[in-house]
Image 1 (cartoon, rainbow, N blue to C red):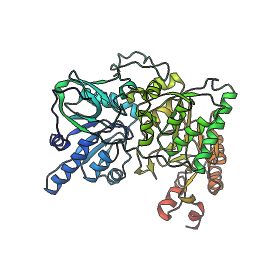
Image 2: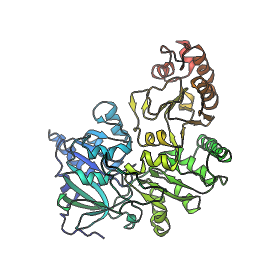
Image 3: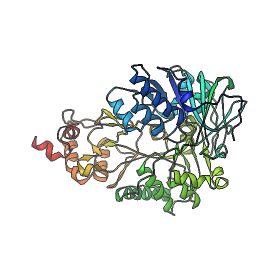
Image 4: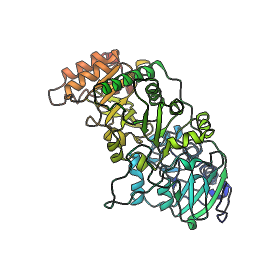
Length: 500
């Protein structure tokens, strides 16, 4: 039920008329849970009409993470995005970014709220936030994500609130919203357990800033995850076996440590595998997203509870939670991403982080974002927050793609998001490479033998042995041969290069 009767009610089209060319919008949304929907979609229609009339209309968009068809995709199709940060997963927007038609700033997600606080990202004209309710005194009850919404509401000149009747009015029971004091006046964050709450169940806004309230009932539109393939299941098996062995060796306590899992099919499959292994005791998560596999694990009692910043769930799984909020609400905490991804809390809790990569090199560096070092896929997201600060940092990827034409294990990453100082464990369906305590050459041999596909092992070993001597052996004339093969011939396969 909506309170806040004093706020102006508008249609999405009327609210879109408030937005001007060049405006900066800080919007709710995190992969794409809880994203603003009605206003961005209406703004895209308005931008198309203005462009047809020969008038400019492009805006700057700042969110928690990716949004979806209502915002990123719709606005990109309308050529209405001049600048975007900190993460996206839209096919059309990706094309515009890689064509330099849209500026994109790739950021660690935990950094964004503080950047907003100090104006690093410029002035914010509008906050557009999805909620289940707003009160006359400025309390805003958010939906399926928190992300940057509390900071956006605090710093925007004007605020547009979307009331989405599709979501459960009990979502507030999961929320734990706090804004950290600015440096150097910060005390240690008192989160000592994944389910510790330190804030309020609502965000706050100055009521005088609210210029429109728009009502709708749109779904989040999170796509269902693919059925795990044999490759996904083998990766999961390697990760599970490693963690069981670590527990038996006494390097993980008997009651285990909390997990973090990145977004995507591989990570979702790994979490499912962990839940099915009863040698691993019931566990908690301290992560950024709560994904489909975790619903069943919670019902089964394998997942005891989870901290995140979003419910990144397909509609079917989300409705299962809404149908039994009395069971799920005490087991899930949704926080601002500055807390869900906070390095200090990750280090304190001893989080075991599992993230995916596009490619990994033979010395332990990883590329999560750019194909052949140039073309953006989605962004670094929150993976860096966890890879650098976790108790165990695990990166996973299928060893090959496109039927073997692309190797995920290469001599040198074409772009580095996570360096060898942070990555501890690398996994493909071929096996698992434990890099702890190994020098560079030992790391290279282990990664090649354990993770590289057989099609590429001989080439990679020869590359190391024939490269100039040094602490890290690289031949700068040859380190991107596989990438050049792919760009010139459509395949990385070493035989192609040898024939050239």
